[in-house]
Image (cartoon, rainbow, N blue to C red; front, side):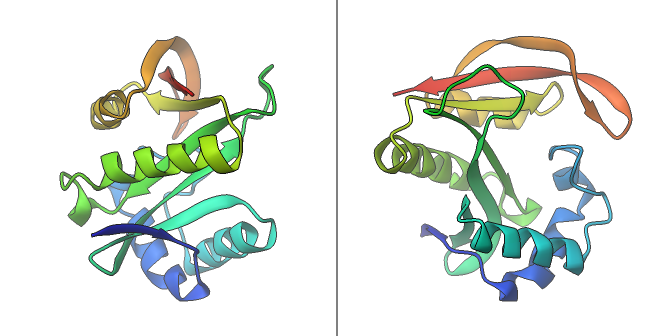
Length: 165
């Protein structure tokens, strides 16, 4: 069973362990450090809780296994009814259908509770699994921002996807 729930500070230890995994952190935004500490995790959780952000912990069969959220689009000429989705799963939980389930769930929440009309996703060029899951959830690839992102000091292509209400 897959569920979304509010983060708690009790998640910080396992969050920092899961995020540090090289195959997980390579797919996250460049703002997430490779040596993600418990302090980083606590700051993330406190921010999510105290700033009323639309971020959730993911549980699979009662076990914390990842995170998902919708964020305002920064530096974009978008509108208030558009947000960007971000998500990750710990490696032991890959290939179980969890990503597909939670992406669909948070998009439904975004459209109904936040009155969104557009949800965007940006994916590094090498993250084919994430692209596949997004397409499986109904997202359409709108294009490639050539050399549009930085990860670990390298400039890479970013693939933009969108789901419209």
